[in-house]
Image 1 (spheres, rainbow, N blue to C red):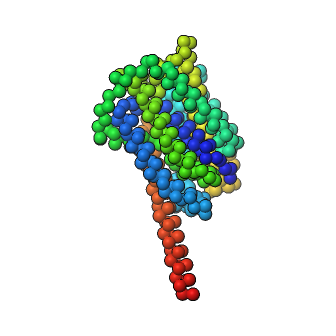
Image 2 (image 1 turned 30 degrees about the vertical axis):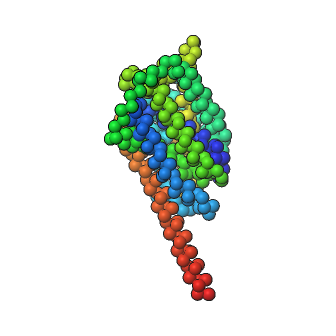
Image 3 (image 1 turned 90 degrees about the vertical axis):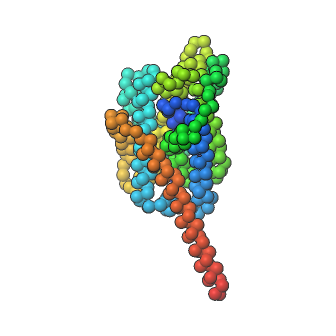
Length: 346
């Protein structure tokens, strides 16, 4: 199994988070910003048992995953679902924002083919490319900040956060934080620097989320209420160039982030499927086809996936790791007791 560096893990997770943030249709306000901060703080606490598990070099997720094969199937289902949601986000954005393609479906097929090919190169190749994507994220934010500075109105920000709305916003943010589940699996591929990578990720995640929200609020003002995708609307209003073509940067960023997000899901699925069905061929292609099919169904039925993904994230990134850590500690304590009793009898 390929290993990746802690810095590459950071870049992958930030890329996935950024894709979720720029695809959000929820309005940014003081409640959303406070809720995101609460959610990210709780996610950091939830990551502690995961770090403690991986702190022990003898820990093997492949051998010790809770529920065995059924547990692995749960993770496969989640990754396929998250990939499907990513394709749905692609379709929805291309309906509201100009893209140089004739149809959203054609774009999804092309992107799916790219993701399957990229997944065939392995996680190591993708993690190397993630550094370029991270640089693109930083460049895009710098361009947006330069453009937003003369147009931003601080009076548009009203600090009237309400407790119940903050809690709702925190729950909503958590339901969009699928990278927590990916983090749990990807950490096994990182030989060292896990704590540093996760600490940097949560700090970067907080800064990124709050910065984009602040730009959207101060630049768009009341217009944010009629915006389908606030990030792209803020980008359109924050043109720092006289030729007014900074939008192209955000389109490129969006496409790259979609490829990274979907490819990570495909790679993680193929890794786990290989453990369950090692002789199965065309795993990446089958996974991509399932994602596209489910995405089409979600779009057709207009299903709200937030409660589903939220439940999966809670189970797969919080409850299962906590149970695994408690079970592992109990097993270690029993071994210590047996060892102490044996030595005492001797």
